[in-house]
Image (tube, rainbow, N blue to C red):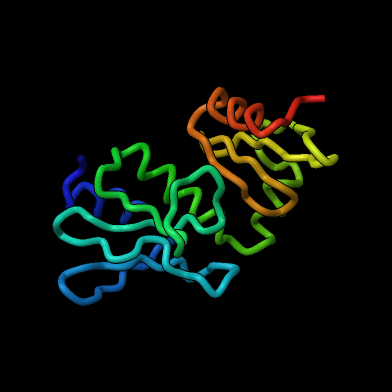
Length: 157
């Protein structure tokens, strides 16, 4: 488990986020350029190491009814990936459109039930699954992304 200081260092490395102090020594981190009303990416990070990351627009993530994921026991790579996916999911549509339009390093189209098409995009060391302009999920490896797509009934053409 990461210490509070280690979590702060990881979160502070995201220049897109702005730290805001809240009660009881906790901190929130806002993504001011969010394309949504929702701006808080990291919620109530506490000196005891507890805190939450917003994942309300992500699928395949174990979030509560408010879309929050508890990061108390997260390792460094997991925390970085979740924060990056959260920021991307809140990004204005123009950023998502750029990702879907083919500016990424690699991309694949996957076809599934009811003639749905998902786009698997490799970008910034992560694999993102998009449904149109909406981010569905993010994965650290290609293999994890493929497993997810296959489990959901999607196949490459």
